[in-house]
Image 1: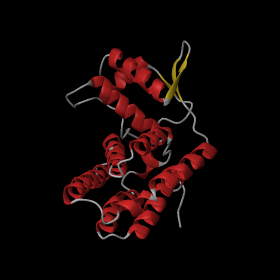
Image 2: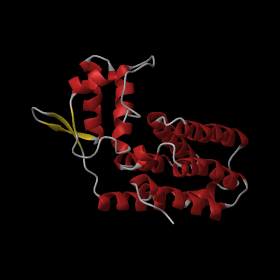
Image 3: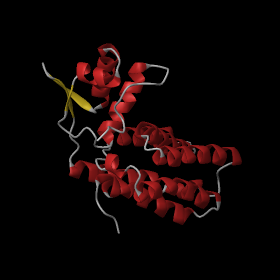
Image 4: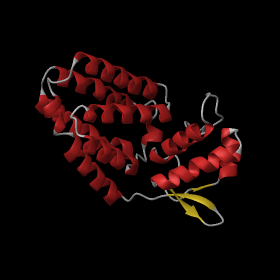
Length: 222
C-alpha cells in the first residue's frame, strides 16, 4: 500500500521541516510503529532528498521524544504504552474540557471566524487523506482555542501532551466515516460555543478527546 505520508517532496520550503512533519505524522498515526528503525539514507531515498535534512529532522524528533538513537543502527521509534496513553488522554480531558464553559458565549466574531477557518482545514485535509496537514491543522485549532482562555501555561502543557500522544489506528482510518465525523466535531464545537452552551461544549470536547483511545487507536466506539 502506498504510504499516505512518506514520499517525494514536491512543496517549496524547508526540506528539514517537511521531513520532520511527515515523519512525526507517520509516527503519531501508527504508520511507523513503535520499535521501527529509521535511517537517514533510507528516508532520504523515499523523500527524494539528500540525507542531510533528513538527519537534521531525525535529530529534532529525538529531542521531541518521537525517536531514540540506536547506536550504529539509526533511530528507533519510541514506545507509548497503552497505560501511558490512557493517562495522557485523561489528563487532556481534565485540562481541555472544562475551559469550554469559560469560552462559551465569550468568543468574539473575529475569533470565531479564524477558528472556523482552522476547523474547515481539518475537515478538508481529512477528506484529502493528507495526514501531515490534518495533524498540524488539528493542533493549531486546539491550541488556538485554549489560548483564548488567556492561560499560556495551559497551552504549553497541552502542547507537550499532544507530542506524547500516539494515534496508532489513524493511518488506517483515512477515508472512513469515523474520521469524517471526528473532523466535523470541531465545527459542531464552535456552534455550541457560539450559542453559549458550555455544558454541551465541555461534554463534546471530552468525548472528542476520547477518540484517542477509541477510533484513533483502532478500537470501536459505542
